[in-house]
Amino acid sequence: MGEQDWTFIMSKMKILVAGGGGFIGGHLAKKLIEQGHDVRIVDRKPFDEWYQVHPEAENSVGDLQLLDECEKATKGVEWVYNLAADMGGMGFIENNKALCMLSVLINTHLLRAGLSNNINRFFFASSACVYAADKQTSTEATQLREEDAYPAMPEDGYGWEKLFSERMCRHFREDFKMVTRMARFHNVYGPFGTFEGGREKAPAAMCRKVIHAKMTGDHNIEIWGDGNQSRSFMYIDDCTHGVEMIMERDYTEAINLGSDEGVTINQLVDMVEDIAGIKLNRNYNLDAPKGVNGRNSDNTLIKEVYGWAPGITLREGMEKTYDWIFDQMKNRYGAVV
Ligand code: NAD
Image 1 (cartoon, rainbow, N blue to C red):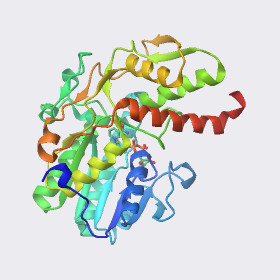
Image 2: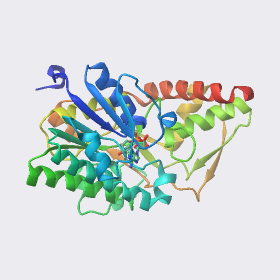
Image 3: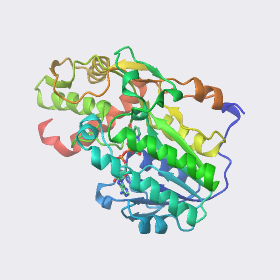
Image 4: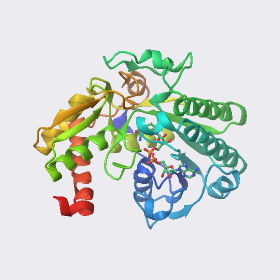
């Protein structure tokens, strides 16, 4: 069945979105609610820190590292989307490896509780950080194919947790016949995400820095690394579309879900400057965390399996993201505009 023929054909279900107070979970939950599903959202953060609160859902605060909380969260549920993890951009994951690895408890306990509560289907949000570092040494954005995750040498901390949890999903499927699905997200961005505080990723951080320069008149910005490191960035709408597609259909192995529009960090800054209508002085901080030199998504497999791949252009997505962050900063720091 090609992408054109494919629609979400599910009847109304009870669905858990774990980590739905976060960026991707918040968007996914909204979409599921709009489709008529009965959605339960559980997140560890207090409600006033959720990026989106959907009053139509059953919302609760709970620590899903605990088996008891996972038992409660999965009771009466048919499908589980696990978007909960302790995560952030390079600055966070390079300095918080133990916290990142502790997310293994969330996925493990959700799988165990899901099994005892007889859920029908389970989705795990994996990451491009599972790919071996030695495949990403060139700033020519290396297109990573799914098989490049092995032999395993993922990003320390965060990447090991993701790879281990992928295997846990695989073995729950093979040994316990639980239907599990996994996607390896490549940098997701968009409105209703974090843009300050240390967990933000490059697109949101660039928007914040450029907007700050515009608002204050201080035209110096700091760039982490030399700006030549390359990445691809997927707009949130492509992400949630892909997640639902992967969950609903039959492919069982971990699959890339990312844009293959490669860009250097300098080009990303050029784009944000252009959107903002401003030119800035760039100060390169070579000591700051910058991650691997080059990474991109190879989308051969997702196109083969689903006849679809993320296609929203970076320019289109960045304009929407910039506008949203601009409004947030204007509301918050209006006085300095
Ligand atoms: P996010 O930080 O915005 O959302 C994650 C949510 O999980 C947060 O709201 C957090 O409070 C919650 N959480 C953490 N620990 C919890 C716990 N013990 N119990 C309950 N909730 C808990 O991150 P996101 O960008 O929405 O990412 C969602 C998923 O996608 C994560 O698994 C992440 O690793 C993965 N991912 C994201 C990206 C990206 O670019 N955003 C890239 C690759 C993979």
